[in-house]
Image (cartoon, rainbow, N blue to C red; front, side, top):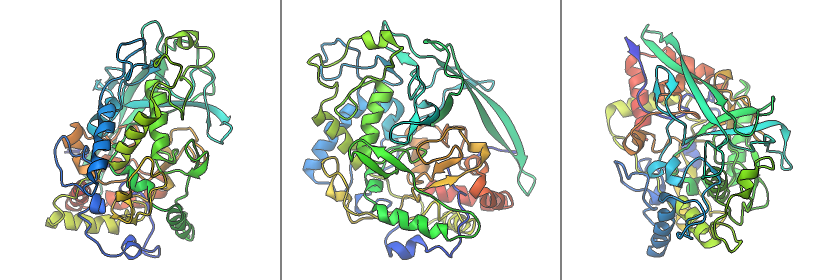
Length: 476
């Protein structure tokens, strides 16, 4: 009998840090773990579960949330257009709206496949490009012709940069009780590049769109708390050391702690939103005022621009409302926490040392950019199940591409809150940074590096223990 995993997240058995590191419960104090976002928590299931404002937000904040939500969901159009508030799409782009990648605020999926080969071009699976070296801030150095990201779509009169071919190859194995499992190993190729060959040293990193719940709460965790947690891990003798990324932030205009993105390569919600508008949709803003065309892409440079007054294509007020909306999206409450199987799974989760990289709880402080956020997020005890740090996850998950301080094998511990609702919100179970895993158990089995001992513990578990572990994660 084959075992293909259920539902879950990018990293369950991530870390091997034992009780010598202070537990999250003793750091944050007692509270209700069902309330994932403290007083911001919403009790929601189904398709809209990732679409609600913080439960403790006031009416003024809810109005602003709704304004931002409308721009998050609706498509932008190519210029020139009578829809002047939404024109300026492209010239190069991957999606026409934020919701095109983050459907209902949720997680993207890789393209459909047949016979192990992709049938369509990706939308929510992006491909970052760089060549060896660093830019002026120490970040990835863009590919000279195609820039920082491959754009698979373009407005009329402009050539899309190329297409992506994906093939999956099976990797088979057995658990300790002889039950079989099957993993999918992807191979990516960029084909039909429209502006000539890519640099021979080009490094390509696939990145699937993540759900946007609770990002404002993660931003409100004090930097010194994250760094103290990293310092505690550095005292370990077994080489399990979560480290922070330091990244350039366009809002702070300085190097800050990386909190978001698969490599913790983004430091603020505002930077994340404005950068995605620019790279994913080709929409300029005051934070990213240049089109995502390179000097070699003359048709892109000559294409009409939106907002023909010469101002950025998204104005500061609209952009601020969008950032505010994303900051205030609430995490849903846990489900079925009282079930015996869930409680057994939680014990397995801790016994396998999953809980320190996927640290259960944090306290939030004051949000750092209140012009884009709300004080409703302050002073909350939250349960995101992440340490926001980078960990070496082994060669099997390496993307071969550094990102600021993150090595090719290092990935940020992803939050687990809301994981069990992805199937309801997005009708799929694809996990890890590129969607290769089809559920919690496959995600665990891909873990190596710092997670190897934990992964081996899971391999040796009984089917009952494995099912309980998955069930616990699905409750988060």
